[in-house]
Image 1 (cartoon, rainbow, N blue to C red):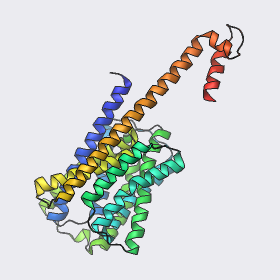
Image 2 (image 1 turned 135 degrees about the horizontal axis):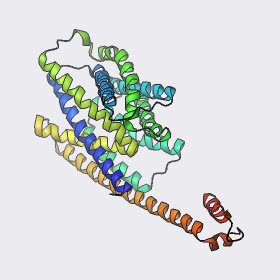
Image 3 (image 1 turned 30 degrees about the horizontal axis):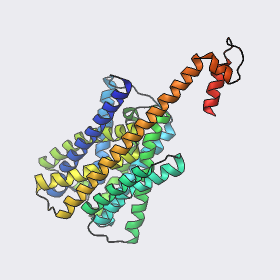
Image 4 (image 1 turned 135 degrees about the vertical axis):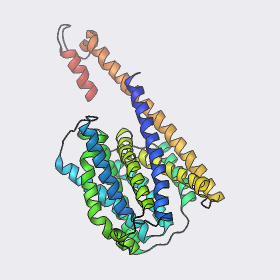
Length: 348
């Protein structure tokens, strides 16, 4: 199996793990929050991250991955920013209608595209932009119902979108800049994320629910679902970093909307949630957008790979054929300058 095939297989595995684990934790948390009344989402997320760190620490002790320290300030800033973005998303949900919150989540993709275009000079073709627009329209039809606006909720939503986009872009850029794996980055950043949410979580949850997380009645059933949620979260957090590292923040958001559609479907099948023709139409449109996005991304990646292979072949040919070097004005056959000259022309 070639290196490219192994990479594609790893990407498919990461995407599949992300979908399965995310849908599982949504169903688990829905039972915990809606059925059992444990509404402390931010505090629960801090426990998720704490369990994730402990699990990775055990994996490190078992030598399943290698610890690779790098820029401590970058790790700390990244971890705190991630924690803040999670808290702001929860506040956005608490101070806005469900429909406006869904619009907030939809805004993450265009905001990410804008930031990557402005600051990283990344280009998105018209075909990719069109497929993303179709996807967003479909998810909007399926999930957005009411749009009740208020100033505080709108400000929180804007801050949530910006911090989430930056955090997800950083997840990708840090892995590439410092050459660390998703596991290494998650291991070093999860303590800062957990600490940020552990401090702010009970306060935010009290603001949103008027309830004290420490005064809640923790029955055996509640404890069981909390433990189950924390265990599933290890897979969710790991697959999140893995997907963004192997693909891009935009692809991760597209995958997130696929999860939304699956959750709607599972909610109808398993939990008998209300389902309308509008939901079905929205999901179908969203799936078309996802298929087009996957197709155009695959085609463009193949084109880039072909162009890179062609350029590499030209470089090798120019290095191996002295006549090409002489045509470029390099001198005699025995000199080593032709290869340097060919490379220089290529870089120019």
